[in-house]
Image 1 (cartoon, one colour):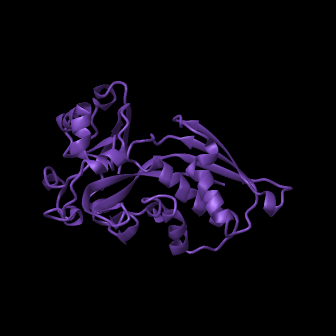
Image 2 (spheres, helix red, strand yellow):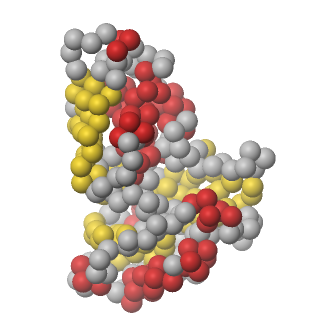
Length: 279
């Protein structure tokens, strides 16, 4: 069975308060975008449930570390703790850059849960799958449905929100990921939580042309201070004609929304991953 875990962008991201558990409450709108990994899983025969395991190979964009610590394997183990799963062999082709704020690892994990639910006929509800996914990462639950959503809490409380899909229909989305790593933990340490003057979902109900300087990502300020090249990339996207540009998540991917496809995009960001898609 093959699935295509998609990326997401954050349309606005505000850190509104610090929680007693050390995490932060946020407000953001998650929007799925058609930049996808490829995940293929096959069941292995002849092994008992007590021997069940997930073999994983990863290709495409390189990932550091032990594959047995990959979120795909962790998703398998999470379900295997409650359900008798067969041993499986998984192949993951990474097209979504890592450490980008695009949710690639979270999407892989959520789509693994969805795939195993279908492949093994577990009959889990969407809510049950979201509960499993939330145990793997703050934004994992979003990818169970991968539909536009207003997210609060740590990003795990989701409210369907279709306004961005209507506003962006027919536009082009450019994603640029430089060879820059941004520490999410350090970025949070640089932020003083505060509620925004206007909630991001209210701004997103208005025309795209009104978003600039109103729809903000709180992580941009510390990221731009530490990495001025990110600010230059955002400015360059506007220079290419973007009607709106922002860093996604805690970065370091930048995205721009265009009415017309920017012909200079492939040459504007040498050394960076770039993708252009119609949305």
